[in-house]
Amino acid sequence: MEFDAMTFIDVADELLQGLSRTPTVKSNFDQGKVRASVGRSYYGVFLVAREKLHRLGRLTPTGTYQDHQLIVDALGGVGTELGSKLDRLRAKRNRADYNLNSHGFTLTSGQFWLGIARELTHELRSLR
Image 1 (tube, rainbow, N blue to C red):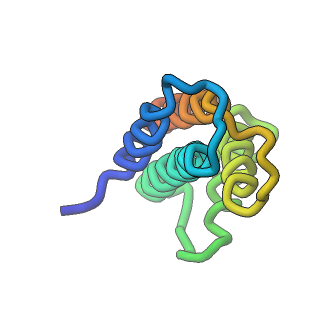
Image 2 (cartoon, rainbow, N blue to C red; image 1 turned 60 degrees about the vertical axis):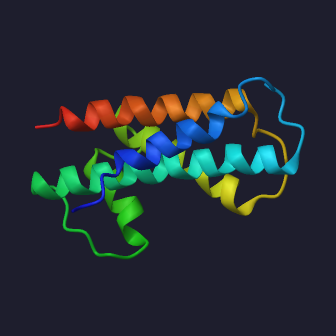
């Protein structure tokens, strides 16, 4: 059975559900949930995009880090709506994973990026 990449987006949502009573993230553990949610949101979209673009013949995945940029390019690049949204989500994921500064990782921001991920997957599924 093949893993459904949308599961990552469901996991991202579940991570945020536990924080719904505390809109301001006060503990490191809660901030970790928001950061993990951003990461799962990105990777859910990344995998959906990679598979869809490959099926459409617009992308030949390399299986390396280069696929992240190749997917943005295959979506039309940073100057397009889809390419820009995915690139911005990736940038936020990078900050979530590598920047220890606590600014910008609130429940509201987690919900925003989860919403972007959902929009992107919906738009990707309708690509022809």
